[in-house]
Length: 342
Image (cartoon, rainbow, N blue to C red; front, top):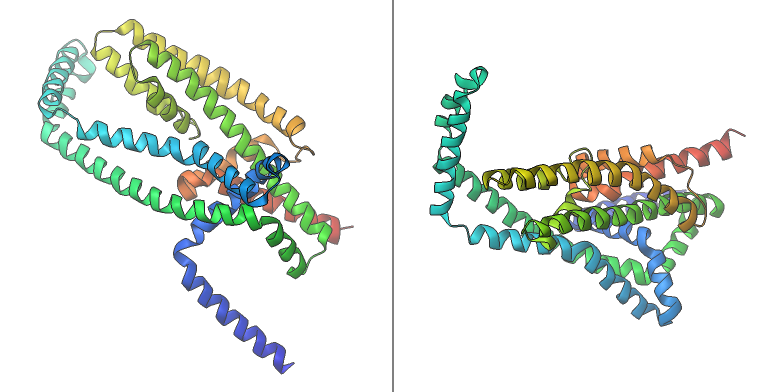
């Protein structure tokens, strides 16, 4: 008995020391683990052709870098170049002309005539430029942090790809649960993450491609705006409005009212309603029933709210953390129901 007490105390002490040692990397390790769980099927599929676990893991890693990290880095890089190449004199002229236009509009709208001019006088180009510089510094800091975190995630993602099966077998051996229970929970969590990953990827590609085509048609950088729209489409409720609304404002400023109306209707009706609300749920159902071996017993609305809550709690990576926690909770409830309430 004394040996067990001493071992338990010593083990908890070492566990706390491990937590302190790896505390700075725990979140990145968790992201890498969840990405591995969501895409481990990709590594297994590649291994059917490559026949080498190391090369299959490396190939799956490169695919994940190309699908997840490079598009985000591309947007950050282009945003940095755009801020660096800003013509401040031209921007001030645009700002002054916009203020005059809004003041003229206010003279024809009595209900804002008393408020808008005073509000515009409080907004100066100096405040706008300082805000823009502050935003650019925040973007730069977050970009550097994303690169550092991304490197750590990539390293651990390869570790989980290569040694994932061994680690899973080891965890099943040491955990105080039946192997069937662990397999059921693992199947539920991995299936949910795979469903979220595939449906999100297809949705990002569809919405980004659709907006990139029309942006290119109106003379904008279709590749950049397509990738940016696809990334923003993962944000629930707001989504691509963050991208298409400023584009419409630019077209209105250029006196291209027709183009602004076309892009606004195209984005709101075709992309925002048809693709996001009709095609996306249908796509989730297809992935759930035909691509996954066993359809998941989890509602699509639960996944949607899990993503929404995950983004609110953890930011960008909440897209996979939220569904993972929700799926784990539901799987544990089912295990409890099957084992203890029968």
